[in-house]
Length: 289
Length: 126
Image 1 (cartoon, rainbow over the protein chains, first blue to last red):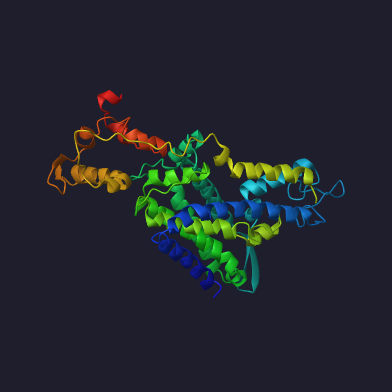
Image 2: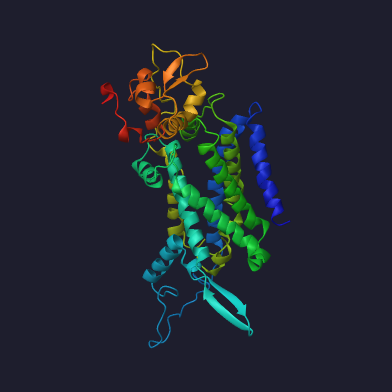
């Protein structure tokens, strides 16, 4: 049930997109009204969450650490894990935010014959989490070609690097495949490992399934159903310049399905507490991915 | 509120970054590409909308069919007009100006096809 509900929710979002693309006025709703609404909600919700967090008293800046704290002079301090200087805090935060250091520390425990309890390092969560997030970043930045004009140089550089293998036309992007593989891993990890499945809630499955849906519809739109990119840029660039127009009959329904899933995803999920309630830096992060 | 001095500026920076496409020196939305259509020819190998979305697939199919499967060099439109299945000698025969045709939309959407790594551009466009 905990997995079925979010699955049905994502299917419903896709169905709404499919229907709305054919109904008069539905294209404007999904293509223009919802994106503005979702974006405003995302920004507002994000700012609200940060302010709420800033208002909450927190006794210690880093509540739980795994390293040796600053102590007597002959006890060696773990300067990054349990910092006592500003520089140490900056180092810890940079490693955490950009390299997911706390996931890198992830361990697993297994019971062998004996009975013997064995602890070991487990790096797969870190590996796939980092692949997932950086692919996502590249994909989002690549999409800036549709929102900016003239297109900034870094977008062209990303597209060149990402399509480096020059497979097919339109060219195949490596991040698309890496992204799907990483989501599949993160999802299967929740389903296959009984201890992770036990602590997983609909709020954990929903974002994974939603993002998977967005990725799949996006890939289908590019390689299978083939959308009219010029007509899409007319709309998306129109959104950023506050003069959106929808070219009649030129945008295929798949685009609206994608937008529907995407818009709702941003609108409903991102400002949702689940993403922000955890401490910005700490062991709580481990269970989130 | 705690840490006001750092959180507020960081939040403003974040909001600025998120909305950057809006205040970026974006050209006007009405500035759409207008690929120049050939004057002497009325009919393309496929309907306009299909060509808009899938011309690159068609080119790849031609390449695979002709170079790898030994397919025919000529094709026929539904109206019976014969054409050469070739980028340089077929497409470019009518759409002769790469800059005014291909590049118009490709530049607009940041698409850089590698056709011209091997194929020669028509002279007037060079």
